[in-house]
Image (cartoon, rainbow, N blue to C red; front, side, top):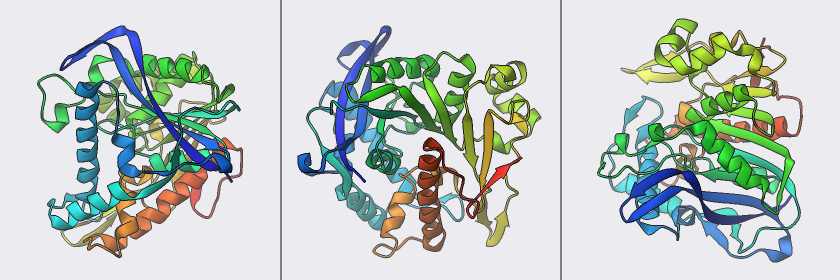
Length: 360
């Protein structure tokens, strides 16, 4: 219905100190903002690579951009069918280059619109990036929403290995969300009375913590694959003690309507097809079902099928050889269905029962 504009900026959380390279100061947030725009004011389309180009604070942003693109490459090298790795060869390099050169649905804009729209604040997963779900951001903006996504990780001085690169443990994710929430509320294009939260994996779990504290402006939480859905209560106690404490000790604190979306898993192990049972959401049985809506996709999905940096390569499955091509074509269709589901939840529409099951 709408063209999509893209605007980026940097803001600083002054009460938390951060140092990297030549920079020392408040914690920086590199924020991407997707907005509906008037057709006549469109400019050139943004390429996917442009989402990683950050003009401010070069010592931090250049390193962050390089590692973010490396994560996209890692997604290309993931065999979805066998849950194994594919070597990064010439074919994978060609797919990455094609993805980075592909035009998005967004047009670069120099100012934000004055008209106010409902807003979605998005939180990426652990070890992931602000650009992990840009297709969803463009899709929601085209339907009349402002979407903000930012880095909740930053590079650590002296650390080069990817697994230890992101400083997620140095900062409180909930206060980071509250900071971005306050920033968004002051934007000319944001209707702060009509705010929503979405996130994937660690970002979904952070959404639960934000909801439990109740100090937020969000009308709904739409959470994608928190991973806790797959575990029995004793597994949550052992692996996710903080989440276990919140769910066990404060279930009555959850006051805001929440949709938790996941799917069964399948894969090939030594040539044998394995399909796991749909997640049972056992850890969430303490939360009032009128507050928490639990949803399973009918078709199996990979954990990264819920964000676009996994399925994006599948658009090129006919142009480039991919060993898991049949699997990933199904994954792409599932990802599109998730986008439709998120929009439908935001707009209060009935859930598509042909593709999803509400777990009672």
